[in-house]
Image (cartoon, rainbow, N blue to C red; front, side, top):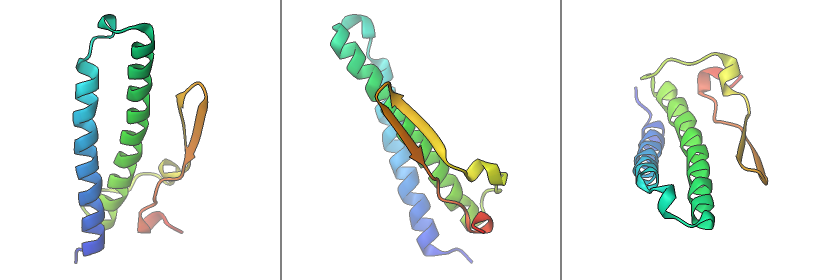
Length: 104
């Protein structure tokens, strides 16, 4: 039996991923050669941050899909903390949501 809460969670993640992928395509279409150095640096930083957010959303969507039974669980080590360094000054540790089958 599908849990509506898990289905809504997956739906939100997929909508977010769709929006972010469109934004990623839009950013990648911009030519860095036509930008000032400051603009190019900002565009590069925006792509790095967006890549981090996409990876986090993909991990969350996978966990929801496993909970719904439409994806296979990965190894236990795949659900450990993930370190992101989207810029030289920022460091983040993200603990992805674990599917219920790996929650113990």
